[in-house]
Image (cartoon, rainbow, N blue to C red):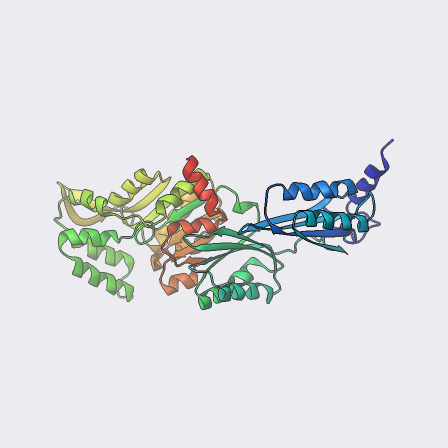
Length: 423
């Protein structure tokens, strides 16, 4: 015969029935009495175990638990069912006595309905600050709650080289939340990324980056121009393109034409001059260890991107190709032109080859010719970009560390450092 306590517990977990209209799918009935036990004080080993050892004789079940330690101070919250052995008053007195013996403070609150599931419309909101001020944090939190969202949890992802925190939010659609917080982010000088919660955030994904001024700090055409002695002319053509007087293809042809006659040996010199963006190597290495596939698309040249692909272990790379005949640059490019539309096309191609749905791709870029790619990806990140690109992308990063993109994916600094030491 089944013990009485086991039968009682089984009844508590029957879930929704025709005679229990207030039951919550997959959990306890909404009117189930619960007790919230909150413990505060100086952290030391064994507090969590000792609390639940204190509660165990009263036959309670754990409904929810959360613990946080900041600067050596612990906040431990345990939501448990009402005691089945003894009474609640006795349990309260025992917990308070134990807390006092440990030089901790305890708060115990009884109630019902506090085991409700989270609301629909769940999102992760990542906030990057350098620094993250109280004013900007207040603005982001107010932006969430003023539009019907609820902050269910806040978690620190990193404290250097930027401060990164993640809010778990429910009760508001992701797109609406993204629009609201983009305005607050611009107003207060922080970076905010809003992505939908769900399994797809943890699924293997594809990250595709621009190269010039994104993966690397340089503009490759300008490095070649310096060796050809035509930096001013190249810069003038670039300015015309930025003013809209030339499209990308026209400006590419015009700038490359100025390199005609340059000895092919300059390719090795340019490769040696390339400077990776701070955090680029860490970003790629961490993504690869997490099982991501990583690629680059560039309006620059394969003579550089092929070397980067080999050096960093990239899965995909595509760019324009400088024509070389008899050891000299001809001033022409060969093959398919990688322009604004081409970058988005290549993102789709890489995703298909990687077997990754487009919604699970991440694109990173800084220029107007990256916009189609950023908008086509599941998450488009404007990296130290012009205002027009920042406004059009899903999110923006304005600090000069490329590995901060990892925080937008929910990767913590501690996880990055662990990967570095064990890899």
